[in-house]
Structure formats: structure tokens, C-alpha cells
Image 1 (cartoon, rainbow, N blue to C red):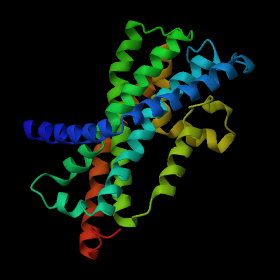
Image 2 (tube, helix red, strand yellow):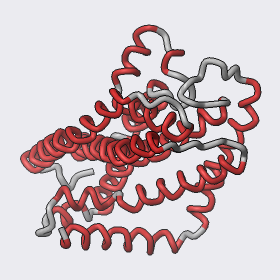
Image 3 (cartoon, rainbow, N blue to C red):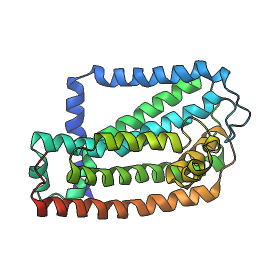
Image 4 (cartoon, rainbow, N blue to C red):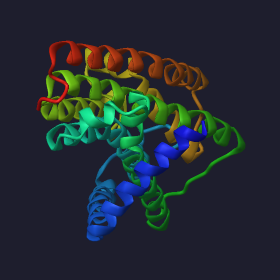
Length: 266
């Protein structure tokens, strides 16, 4: 356990050192996220909020939670593959994977800084949303749901991101696939509008996604709405099972790349 924390801390220090070399990066990213929040703030009065549900008193409150959760989801889904791809193109991937450190720990630690940064951005947006009038109401019941849903969601998206990183090892160029995947999650999971607004088949698909369950739990938990406990349970199960599936996918990808002699190719 101590060794794993040491590796994670080493990657955090490395990426923080790089970040400090480009100090405007975080501020510009936060400004971009704030700009997106402002768009929905001014758009909100034009949207009929009578059928939003999930405790949202306005469209702005509804979409704010969606934007913040999706910020973390998008980072978790893409950062592992993006970091791995960077190591492929710079020629450091094979050297890293040949060290005594477990391969999964190396890949998992590589995106640790991005996840911490996404969580920090999410907290900043929460504060800004509260300043702009969003009434966050976290009850004791909601707090219990959050304590289950937040780690389950982070685990789910990190595991999915690890599986996508495995695809990057095999197929190399996966940028378009990642964009398509995250766009599909944004559309189907209820980030910008209720899943019930989707047409028939898409609504069915959306309701079956664990990412949708995450938003269905986190949104009412933050806004004082009714907690769908069946989705809390489903999300917890998905968060527990996903890492094992991701490990299988990633391990198979590594073995295939080694067998084909393409691990260091890009």
C-alpha cells in the first residue's frame, strides 16, 4: 500500500512540476469552464423547468450538477488514454512498463493529477454556482447517498478510462473514439437535459448506463430531491465490478501488443 502511494505521489509531483511551468493553463481551463457555466446561467430563464425533477428548482441548478459531474467523467474517461498515448509518442511507455512497478499502477497513477485537477475545478464551479443562486440542499439522506455515489462514480469512470487506455495500446490512434464516447455519455446520461426527453430507444439505452445512474443520484442528493436508492445500489455494484473488467481488458491489450511487438510503436 505504501509503495503504491509513493508511486502515485511521484506522478502527482511530476505533473505538478510540469503544470507550474505553464501557470496560465489551469486558470485558462477554469475560465473556459466558467464561461460554459455563464452560458447556461443566461439560458436558464428561457427553459421551462416544470418537468426537470431531481430537486432542481431551475434549469441552471439542473445543468450545473450535470456539468460538474461530466467534467470529472470526461477527465476520467480520457486522461488515461491521453497520458498513455503521450508516453507512446515520446518513447517512454515501454521503459516505464519494464520497471518492477506493476503496469496497472503506472497507468493508473499517470492520470492521478488530471483527476485531482478535475475535482478541484468541480469544487470551484460548485462555489461559483452557489454564488449565482443555486440552492444546494444536502440532507442527511442526501449525504449518505453522496458518500456512496461519489467514490463509486470516480471508480467507474477511472475503470472505464483504463479500459479505453487498453484500446489505445492496441489501436494507437483513439482520439476520435474518445471524443465519440464522451459525446455519447454527455447526450445519453442526462448531463444537459432529462433522459426522459430522449426518443424511445435512446431513452432506454440512457437509463441502462451506470453513468446515468450517477447523475440520477448525485443531482437530487445535491439539490434536496428524492434519492433513487435502487440506482444507488446499481451504481455501487457497477463501481465495484468495473475495475475487475477494466483490469482484464487492459491486461489482454498489453499481452496482445507484446505478442505482436507493437508496444513501443505509435
